[in-house]
Length: 167
Image (cartoon, rainbow, N blue to C red; front, side, top):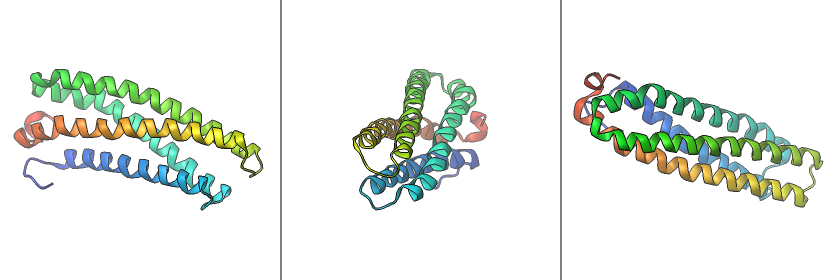
């Protein structure tokens, strides 16, 4: 998107959203590749664990910055959007719960898998299924949430510009 009012802050913010979409998709694909036997356990663990940690930590931090700084600035700039920002902040709470559940099920999956000695058994499959379900729920909500944020915020930025809004 190219627009005179779309400044560096908005471009950075949209870039972070794109990164969350892309990394979330890569994590899903990585798990699928592992479960289908296309990636061995040691390779999967080395690839998966740091990327999942990065994803979860950065998403949590991103939402904290939005809640504490950007959303109040946008609400002050356009009070008629307050209800929309209330919904987005509520989403952040639900997504936070999903983040915690995703981290817990990922840790359980990696632990059970590590204890299995590389043998796929029912416990490993159940732990992988639990992680996959939790992760998919997080990603579905997150993708919808990112689109909702962009639908609410980008028109305001395009209309007024970053400097006039105060970002």
